Length: 176
Image 1 (cartoon, helix red, strand yellow):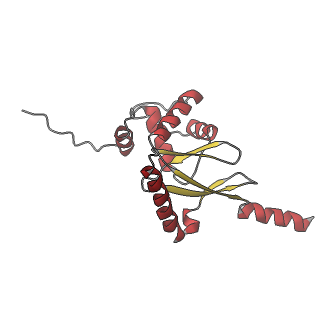
Image 2 (image 1 turned 180 degrees about the vertical axis):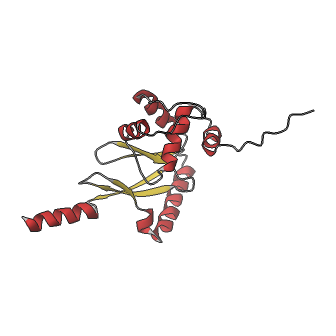
Image 3 (image 1 turned 30 degrees about the vertical axis):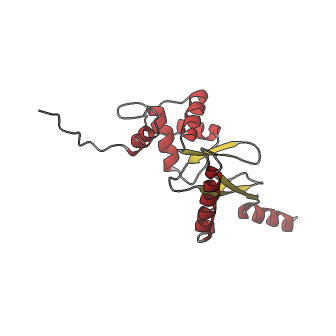
């Protein structure tokens, strides 16, 4: 008699890792899970390591959460980026920032404040224009594919001073 198929639900993080040819290790589940749980935030390597270190979530069923050493984390985020699960951006200070790559997004517009160095997504701020940007990104990527380019992604960074820093600077200038 054949064995009955397992009725256990498949963990979506395990499914993503498997679909991209990656091992479903506790570290991989933990890193990808954290980034998917914080989709509007990009992290430097050090910020991600610190966030994971202070996260009480365990690596998996019956496992105790453990600290990831920096080399293991670096290699893991590099692999996740290579297969398209993470978006890697280099900011104006040449610092790499990582965040979960939304499956349907080809262009992820973001704003980098030159004063406080916060990195903020712009999808909500652009509202109706975000679709125009997505269409333009798809057209550009398709044109490059026709020319033979592979493994493409598009990064749109707007740099300037955020509203919070601009207001603080104005307040400081009027008080002086």
